[in-house]
Amino acid sequence: MTSWTAFRRPTTGLVVVFALALAPLPANETTAQAGLGARPRDPVTVIPLDQVAVEHRASVAETIRDATFHRQGDSDAFPCHSKLYLNLLNEPAITLALWKDLGDSPVRLRQVSSSLYQGTDGAGASASWEYLIRTPNLTVLLGHLDYNGPRGNVQLQGRIVMVIRSGFYREVNGENYVKHDIEAFVKVDSKGWKTAAKTIRPIIEKLLEEQVREAGWFISLMGRMVETYPDWAKQVALTRSEAVPETKQRFAKVVEESRRPGASPGRPTALADSAASPAPRRR
Image 1: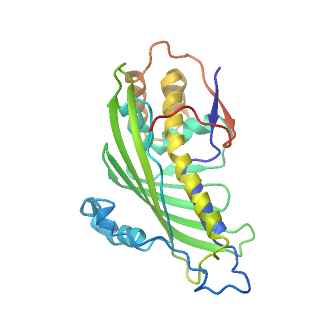
Image 2 (image 1 turned 60 degrees about the vertical axis):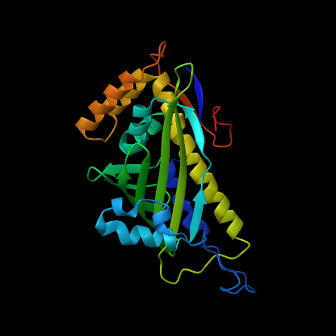
């Protein structure tokens, strides 16, 4: 069995941003002095807003325009079949099942409808994620997050708009590649929430940057695992995933279509060590 480097938590890890934002202002720091906010963006320059359902359009526009935090990830390119990549990106119930088969994880996720998912991270945060745009080259999700502190004395609510831009190409040797980048806009909605102090801002922004980067690495990692261990991936998706039967069968078909010559009949192992270096990537 091959040992792979994995990451402790997939994209739901963005919720910890809210926990860090709770840090109190220093006694000599005023709210005005500690101002923290992303540079305002015109939503129509970020995504095709007219493709978002009318009932979500205002919320998405507000989150992008008035984001408390914003992070644009670097472009990343990695070997993966386009159909497999899109299945992993668009079917989080299967992707999470594969992840959890490799190690314990407190994350829970259930599919509410074809585009809506609800879950918890096991650390006081719950979220609903809805796919608003789901095309081969552009994926837009809107998340509503709730965080409850360990003692119940802290409650935060907020929204995340996550934008994934994807492209596909083939190398001269016939290898299929995916190139994507991830952008996240986070808006804290809780009443009375105070802007974090200047001394805390670098910590929050660094955490958000790491989470956006790991979100991209997570998809590329899972893609490589599935292509290398297709039998394992199909078995997990068909028996352990909470996805609906049609989704499971569709994923199994895509796994066969993307099977590499000499693929292993075994299963991978994962190291829960996010500090280790990821597999080689191209940019």
